[in-house]
Amino acid sequence: MPTPHAIEAEVLDTVHAFMNAWMQPAEEAVDGVLAHIAEDFTGLGTGPGDYYPNREAFQTLIEREKEEMPYPSDLEVPWIHVRLLHATVALVEAQLHSTIFIEGDTHVVEPRFSLVLERREPRWLIVHCHFSIADAMQEVGDTLMDALEGRNRELERLVAERTAELEAAQAQLIQKEKMASLGQLTAGIAHEIKNPLNFVNNFAGLSQELITELEEEPDSEDRQALLADLKANAAKIEEHGRRADTIVRQMMEHARSGRGERRAVELNALVEEYANLAYHGKRARHPAFQVAFEQELAEDIGEVVVVPQEIGRVLINLLDNAFDAVQERSAGPDDSFVPTVRITTHRLGEGGAEVCIEDNGAGIPEAARARVFEPFFTTKPTGEGTGLGLSLAYDIVTHGYQGSLVAESAEGEGAVFRMVLPASLPENPA
Image 1: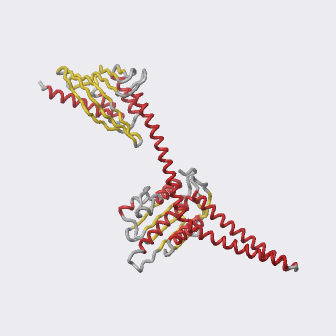
Image 2: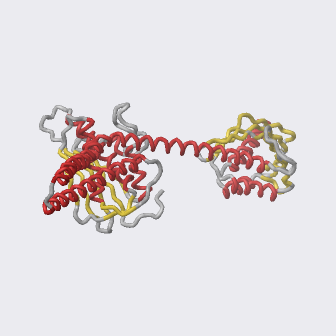
Image 3: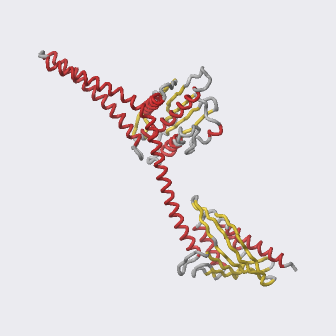
């Protein structure tokens, strides 16, 4: 006859198998648990509604739990005690610690249970179960599942609140990054706006002189010539005033929070405009910076339907990184190094468009190559980069336009960033 210690070990094996089965996915859990339940099983729970008069009712509980709470979980048993009432009857009492993982957060449940097991050859089966959660406040008619569902709803509410807070914080970070890139553009914008303003000032001065001459000129033929010149000057003033207005409006669009409206734009014109802004902005911030900046824009590129300031933001981030890369390498000992950044466009066979930005900087280290588009990842010294620029660029292209943005690099041989915009775009970008 087995010793009491050996019998207790058999009982514990059955109980552990029962608990492990309960932690499995739905179908496995139901079959596994029922394999350890006697046909004449009864059970009780925490609330008045927690009464399971037979095996089928207990099966319904398990199925409901797996359907309504399909979350992964871990189970620990802080203590468990076996008391033999007879060689074929045992009472088991235990404290459980179950951690349920819901959307990145954790939910802890600490039920207690007592089991009555009988030896029914050739194995032990559970004939009665009483389980409860010590701090579960339940209404009349509630079951353990109702209590868990209440906790689950509360946890989901807290998770939703936390998610909203994180999304708001992310929006603030994105806006800060946009304003940071706007700051980088300020000098470039000043350079771009200076030319039309010079034209406006010069033609305004000439117009004032023409008006003076017009007032003093009695000859009608000469007056007509002066009026024609004055009209031409006014047209030039209007043209360059509109150009300055466009630049300022684009700057405001770049800084504005939220999304702009999609519209058809000439891709080459968009690339050329933001490339010049990025270049002059870099030169203004670093007057000694020298680079061979090449633009090779395909004539057949045509239009793309985009939010211009979004694609402009992508171009600025990519170009700024390229300029930084060649500037860093040019500070090295190689006097023959010629810093070069090239931006090219071409139309793809399936109707999409590709923009490539290539530099001959030091390249991206192999360890960093797979992480360049991760938020907050940067290879720049502390204080010189937020780690958000490439991440935002990637999100704009891939999520907003279902395009692609890839980085190609060999350490010591520069880098190429390829942005592809598809021919057909989703109606409502994310």
